Amino acid sequence: MLRREFLHTSLAGALATLMASPNSGLAATPANLKLATFRFDVSPPMNHPLCGGWIKPVVGMDDPEEAIGFILTGAGDPIVICAVDWTGLLNEAHVKWRAVMAQAAGTTPERVAVQCVHQHNAPFVCPEADRIVMAQGDLPHVVFPDFFEQVLERAAKAVTQAKTELRSVTHIASGQAKVEKVAGNRRFVGPDGTIIDWRGSSSKNPKHHELPEGLIDPWLKTVAFYDGEIKLAACHYYACHPMSYYGDGMVSSDFVGLARKRRQAEDPDCTHIYFTGCSGNIAAGKYNNGTPEARVQLTDRIYTAIMASEAALSPQPIQSASWQTSPLLLTPRSNLTEASLMDLVANKDASLANRIRPAMSLGWLHRCLREEPIVLSALHINQTSLLHLPAESFLEYQLRAQAAAPDRFVATAAYGDGGPWYIPVAEAYPQGGYEVTVALTEPTSDGMITGKLKELV
Image 1 (tube, one colour):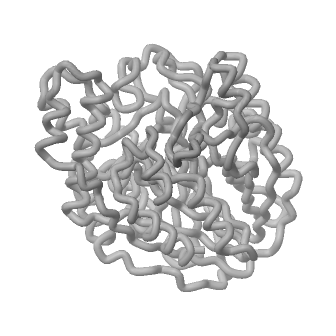
Image 2: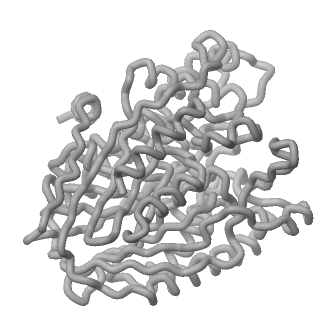
């Protein structure tokens, strides 16, 4: 089948499945559970836009970017979980990625979770936004369409190959360790209930290094799968924006990817996968001054926590496995209108970011009008749950999921479908601040997401 026909067919099937989206949470006692891992390169080529096109495009590479994941069979239709070293996959891009992987795995898109790690010297993909900005005639691409299709072909090939390499998975283990001096909350609220200071991924302001960490989740969590005593895959989860510095045009998986790669080199027979947790309001600015030396320090701290988390692993026989999903239709911000957003895109006096972001917002608005849901999902094995949430969800959603299931080990990956951009909790909206300004959903999203994640875990 021609590439374009394959992608079109996959997308059509994905949308049909999403619209139905039955809850697939029936538990199974797998007699023949099998797992295979895959990985493929997703590094953008020279001159490709980074972070959606409003920072310096690719001029070179510090280290390659990858998509890494696994296929699991024996608990109903196959399940695919994948982490991608990209800034984000929005709307159509996320649906296509899941559709292509589902077709290759012989399953349905609702049984595929694709989560971005969210590095910034990386692609930020919204095909509809790219079409909108290209029509202006004076704006750079958001993504090179041919490159995106090539990556989808690699995804299909990798999953297809993994299906031939399945091996028994008999045990699961979970562990956690505290991460020292990486994460800090970005938002500081004053006595009047509004934001009085904000700390990003890096800062050279001594005040930002002195301010407290604030609300974070200090734990790096690891979930590992085994065939007997052989460790097949180890999934690592931590909630923090994964940028030490960016904007120099140098492709990189940044400090979390570098820590993952160091561990992978030491443990080549096990596939190590890193997932970024709910980090919409969490970043490294308290401990990061944006220098190359700081990247090394942050890498060392994540690596140390990965090692400590793995040291706590104690494999247990797998007794049960199930996959559960829940479709989610969020309400777009009331100030999002076709006319106002197109005016912003067309404003030739505005910065690249302030013209491209509205194009992405248009992609989200159109998706909401079509009532194409986001799909939340969770893989449950024994007393462990791997939870998959969308976009730049605030940390509180991750903490609520853990509190809702205190008898379970809940590991949360955010940055799934990035269409909504930031997803603050309801109380953050009156506080204001950057995240609220660019959030594309109403405060009512809080109740909907919180209810669904509690059901899932």
